[in-house]
Image (cartoon, rainbow, N blue to C red):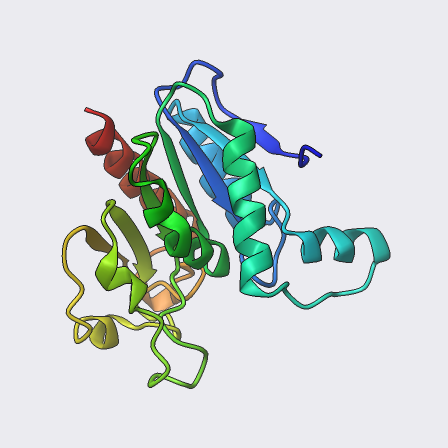
Length: 212
C-alpha cells in the first residue's frame, strides 16, 4: 500500500529529496516546513512522510514512542521505492530521520539513483551520554553525506564532533550558535529563521554539487 506523502516543489526538478521527520515532531512541523518549502522554492522536489508510530499518534491522539529501527528503515525504503524515477534522488531527515537515512544510504550505492544523504541535526549520541556514539556506520559510507549541525547541539556540539575524525564522504556544515533545531541564542545576533535559511542554502549547494 502506498504511503501518504507531503510533496512540494516542481515535478520536473533536477532531483528529489525524501525527507524524514525526527522522533518528537511530525513531517509538517515548523522546522520541516521551513526546510522543505525552502528547498522546493529553490527548485527541488521534496517528499515528506510520517513513520508508522507518528501516524498512529495522529490517528489516536496519543503520543506513541518511535518504532524500532528496522521498522523505520523499511518505511524509508518503501518511500524511496514509491518515488523512484529517472531523476536523481537524495534521502535525509531531521535528527532521527536523518540517522535512519544514513543507516540505509549504502544500500543504494550500486543503483546510482540515490546520490547522497542530508542529515539536519544528527544525533551523534543520546542526550547526556556522549560516550554512546552513533558514528560507526558513518565511517563506512560510500555515498556523500552532508550533516548540518548546530554548534550548540547537545547531541553533538562542535567541540565534540571535531574529535570524531569524520572524513570524506561525510561533510559537516555548522549552523552558527544553533541548538538541535538550529535555534540560536538572542545574543548571537542571529534568528531561527536565518539559521533555517542557511541550512536550506547549504543543502541546496550540496545537492547541486552531486548532480553536476
